[in-house]
Length: 214
Image 1 (cartoon, rainbow, N blue to C red):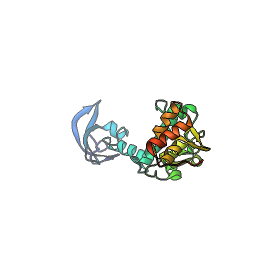
Image 2 (image 1 turned 60 degrees about the horizontal axis):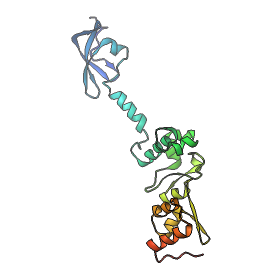
Image 3 (image 1 turned 30 degrees about the vertical axis):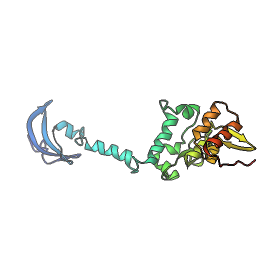
């Protein structure tokens, strides 16, 4: 072996060649190498000199982690809200796809990048979720806000309205006004109860002191 074949102490990516072994692989010398992370492995000359291996695998893992967490918010509720938004619009296996991507609701091109979404919407406030102002339009900066659950219930395209003594409110608004559970009123709407019966029954059972002005 001449000096040009000696790879000892040479660097290849994150590998430092420690010494030659007695092994051969496809007529290529096998070297004992140490990765910058501390792992040791036997690698043949051709894999080192041809750039087929640059590390023990730590480099690939590190690059992947950097790509997915460079914004530092990978495990935050804001990031999960962004992922949920994209899944509802793009993933046909998502159980809510029918109400979103299935009816043409899409994510604007700018928000396919999380950093842009974060720059436009900021950190997700505690107790709020991503809501569209106009439910017939897609996800874009001018059509989205962080809303509390009651606001989203008021904004759903499947909302039901109840008019009682000249007052018209959504089911969610009546529930909040009367101080009762949303489901208590919603169930009666589904069953086809008259508005008077729904409201008066709710007042009688849950809040006898509540008065409703005409």
